[in-house]
Length: 265
Image 1 (cartoon, helix red, strand yellow):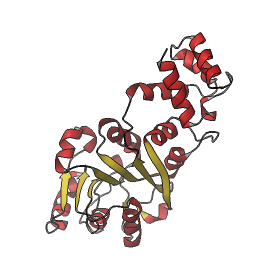
Image 2 (spheres, rainbow, N blue to C red):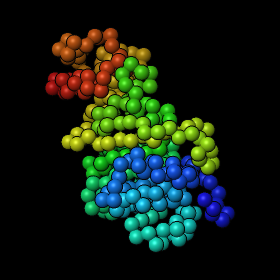
Image 3 (tube, helix red, strand yellow):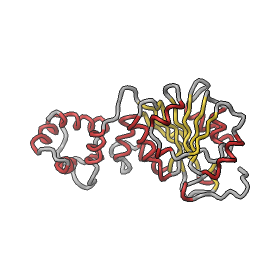
Image 4 (spheres, rainbow, N blue to C red):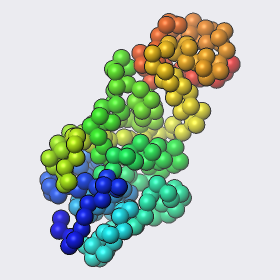
């Protein structure tokens, strides 16, 4: 990337990739084809945008840094399947974003680390049109996303993502691949949305409560969520769960089952 007088902005968490083979590999990881429409978040220098446009029907790319406007406008002036939107996508309603898509679409993004979780949940919570998300995140965040019960990294993020999506790490990306170089390695995390599973605000609240105090038993955390003691005892006995167990030692399906059983009370 060569932009005259351009300075990387720490506020926006800018870390750009220029390795063409890596960019193509990220797009390949997403599984998108020439019939797909893609939402990219974080255009940056447009290198990943170009790789996406080469493989898909359409890419709409959002960039928050207005200093890149002239550069990106000129770079993609002849790309008919690329639309650049200079705006902060976190502050836009989903309905406005989705006007650019004819139906279901995929998300591919090299996300600034500080917006990773809020951005993922913005789309999981507010729309069912996102078919998949292929996103570059901190390696540690990716490891939490795929962690299973019994693993010390297993928690709220693990349960919520694995309930709504099929989750996997497709590759680890060393910090040396970025400019400027971050302090930690990254990973490509692919989330494929499970069909017919819709967002439930109450379930999110429940999961957060289950893991609220990790040193306490699930039983005590459920008491803090204002469930009746006798109802918790009944459900634990029904599905054969020890009253001494902690949330991190239960599978996603078991946590979901407890939620559904307590919801009946």
